Length: 240
Image (cartoon, rainbow, N blue to C red):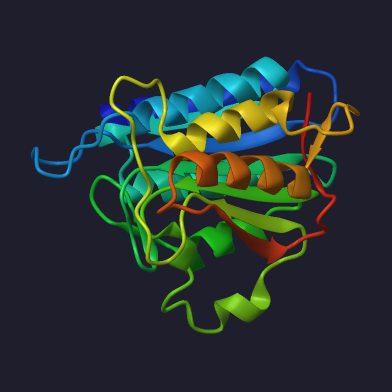
């Protein structure tokens, strides 16, 4: 039954496309896991991180198509299916976003029941016609997501940007009592306009990195945000 409800929710999101006027739109998949199987690996705010990103995207673009998967609903198969369906729906004037908050290992992000690899993410991005493709990840060791990716590192599609919460040997910090983790807190603030240094109501990749990296470095000296991919440093990542 839950599987049927999941696909119905995606279908309902796409039905809105038939009644809305055509214009640039954001297509996003937001994944957050605070509750993993058992109790040992549970986190504090990761599910809330994904919900906060969903809220930000919809507040900025009410016509956006956003699929939210948290905790036990964020299985590997559901995450992959959502990425494939949502990203394929984007056109050449649209933007796609993949957001993940949860556990990370070198070479993968950890869904509820399996590992989401760099190659899987890259394949979903590569099939999309979107003008920009952005991945945000708040996970330990996320800077090393490309480990064991084979030839994929040389085939990064154009206008693909990865913005990750930590270097390949670093953990990503949560703060008990806070609404979001450290990286997501400053990422959200940046996308709301705090990073827009020239006040043109567009946050570019370089503005985003400069703001978030500087804020994290000031409060968590053992954590450093990482950005890489195949994109122009002035590529817009948010118009607000």
